[in-house]
Amino acid sequence: MICPTVKRLAQAVQAALPRLPSCAPLREDLPLRVLLQAHLCRLPNRNGAYRQTRVVEYPLRKENNPLRYFYAFVDGLRYLPDWDEFYEVYLLLSPLVQDWRRRGLFTETFADGLKARLYRCVLGYFTELHASLLLVENLPDGQLWRGLDLDRASLDALWERPHERIGIRIYVRTERACAYREHKDRHPIRIRVERLADLTYSPWPGEHDSLTLLPNGLGYVSREYLRKWLADLSSNDLRPITSSHLRSTTPLP
Image 1 (cartoon, rainbow, N blue to C red):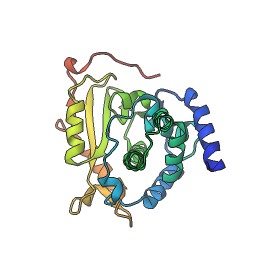
Image 2 (spheres, rainbow, N blue to C red):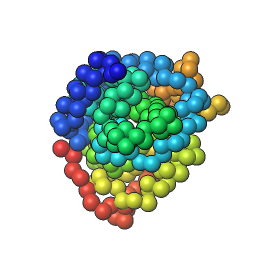
Image 3 (cartoon, rainbow, N blue to C red):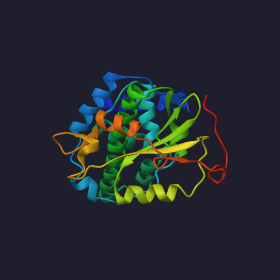
Image 4 (cartoon, rainbow, N blue to C red):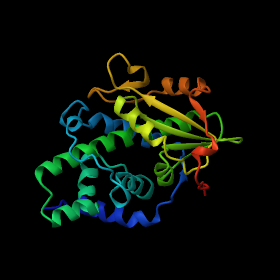
């Protein structure tokens, strides 16, 4: 039986999806940042079964993209779901899940794999949004943008400065994540940017300088690390974009 609260949330998210802007400026929002920290603190530890289960590893694109639903929650409804709420709403709205259920393929193995995959998406989204909100509070100039158009261009945020636009990618510093970024780098960037900056963080013991750690072993990018990252941006961190990287450009609204 579907919980009435979850059903109402799913209906509200579905109604918000068509009204979502493709890209929008991010404003300072201390209450949202504090709530993100609380949600991260309540997430299961990354070393549990969710991290080890990798059954559903193919891309979740278009209507199955979890980010669509996060943007509908946060930008459309001004509501940040916890892990359980997001998982239940995704099950109700994802065409992939509905198709597998109709065909009798939504097995326990598939459900566990999907939940593990969504857990990693939730963890990444909470960490990226928290880091983006910290960036907004500490940028020396310009405006920070976020949105699905940037996500399709493999950017987590775009820093629009008076004299240039910098594409920012925020991700955990692991071998798997770095290999994925190298693969994405082979494709042209579809958003006009002059330079790229990777804001990476590490969850591993001995490399916690980038994170403020939480009791469950997770963490969020610390203000000190972010300020140092901003101060230390160099030619190695901000890579010029050559014409070969660009196939088409999408203007910001």
